[in-house]
Structure formats: C-alpha cells, structure tokens
Amino acid sequence: MYKLPALSLITAALISTSALAEEAFNPMANPSTPEQWEAFTTISYKGSMQSTAAIQAQYNLKIESLNIAGVPCYLFTPQEVKHDGLLFFVHGGGYVLGAGLAGAPEGLYMAALTGYQVLAVDYRMPPAEEPFPAAIDDMMAVYAEVVKEHDPQSIGVFGSSTGGALTLLLSQDAQRRNLPQPAALISGTPWSDISRTGDTYESNDHQDTVLVSYDGWIKPAALLYANGVDLKDPRLSPVYGEFDFFPPTLLVSGTRDLFLSNTVRVQQKLLKAGREVDLLVLEGVSHCGYYLFGENDTSKFYHQQAEKFWTEHLKADSSAETEAAQ
Image (cartoon, rainbow, N blue to C red):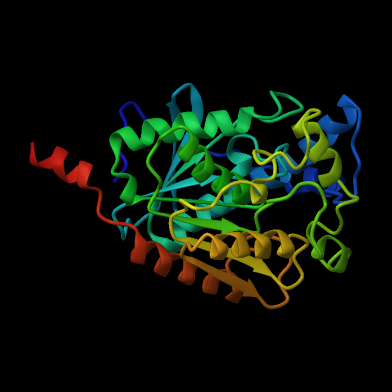
C-alpha cells in the first residue's frame, strides 16, 4: 500500500450533460490563438471530468490529493487492493489536455480493473503552463521521490498516447539521471514520434475514430509543446532515444490507431536492443480505444492482460516490508 501523510479526499464534481450537449469535442480543430486554445481545452476538460466522476462512482474508488516534490499528484485506491506494488501513471492528452482530475480516467480504470493502487502525476502543460520540458521535469521529480520510499522493483509505470511517450521518456531520463529503472512499463499507443513520421499517420488517417488525423488538433499541440525545439529531439520523440536499458515493456495499440506505427517502431527499437517486449494489437481498435469507451469486451481483455503483466513483473515492496518489521 502506498503511504504518505496528510492525504485529503477529493470529490470530483459532476458536469451536467446539458452543458456538455451544447459543445462537442472536435478532433479536427486547429487552435492557434490563446482564445481558441482556451475554448478547446475547456470543452475537453468538461467531458473528461464527467468521465472521471462516473468512473469513480461506478467502482467506488478512493481519490486522494498529494503534493510530491512540489508537483500535484493523485492516489487512486480500488475498493479491494488485490496486489502489492504501486503503478505510476502519466496521463495522455497531447501535452495540452488532461489537467487535474480530467486526466484520471485511464488510471482509474487501471486501479478498478487490476486491483493495484495508482499514483497519477498532474504535470504542467501549455498553453496555461510551461511547455517542453516541464512535463518531463515534473514526472521525473515525482519519480525520484517515489523510488526513495519504495523498492523500484515494486513499481510499474504506464500511460497512453502522450502518457505512453512519457512512460518511455521516464526510462530514458532515469538512465540519464542515474535513477533506478522501474520493474516494468506499459506504454499504450505512445506518441513516440511527434513529427508525423510513420506509415499509419497516413494509412489510418480518417480510419482512426478518436484522433482522426494528424491535421487536426494534434499537429498544433505538438508545435505548442515543442516550443521551437526540433520535433525529432529524443526528449520530444523518444523513438529516437536509447533503449538498451529498458525494463520489460508491454506495448498496446489497435489496427485503426493513427499511432500504430509509433508503437511498432518502439517495439523494433526494443527488439534491436535485446530487451523484453510484448506487443498487443487489438482488432478494429482506434487510438486508446481499449479504455476510452468504458468497460466493454476490449477494455476487459486489455486490463486482464495488463494485470497479468504486472503480476509477472512487479515484486513485493521490500521497503514496505522492512518498515513494517521495524
């Protein structure tokens, strides 16, 4: 069990369905001005907060607010904690969406459907906050504190889309900073190359019902976050980074996913580096479709595979056992 003092319970506010009906998230939006970005992120925030509240209520999950290394975080605890170990969660959203508990749904499902506690990092994002490399800096500041208190071999790191890329970047940055690697990673449909390099950016254009096209909002999101840095910089596009030291990794995508090539290219890099890697490609599934649409057959199957992967690779937290014995 994850232990930190002075945890306060968070109750997510429900967003009215009538308010949501007035606006719809448009994946082909192309925001450029501050006003357009504010409108775009607000629409997404409202919808995501409604999802967060619904998932929390459905599974009776406990959501607690933390501050670790000056970074806001959340701890998600399922009604029944079935496994020792801690899952470190980094949300997606193109480096611009998912602020606060709006980034929680994927992590809440993981907690509810696998029985692990999940620690979520609420990293800074533009346009309201700092661009690259703030997200990485926040994530690594939290990770550095967590591995002081917990056996790294009891920690699994996961996220999807941008969160999938940040999961890869965590391993790469941990190596640069001489921090221990986690026990395992699940990198879901990682945005491993934000430069529109890869076959399925074209072949799955308008086949993916979630992202739809690079020509929608994700292109301006990439440019906004990069803030003038080369889009193929390895800390923006981790597929160009090193993989020789990676822990066991499960990669997840779907046959209609715009980021399928992003995922496959990471698998190839890990195989060339001689690392342990599994690739789960789900039939007919668009970007992040293994959790976005609630508990269905695809979601259940994915979370069963995730739980199996975690239990095979995460050890009991020896630091917690030592503390209990004292």
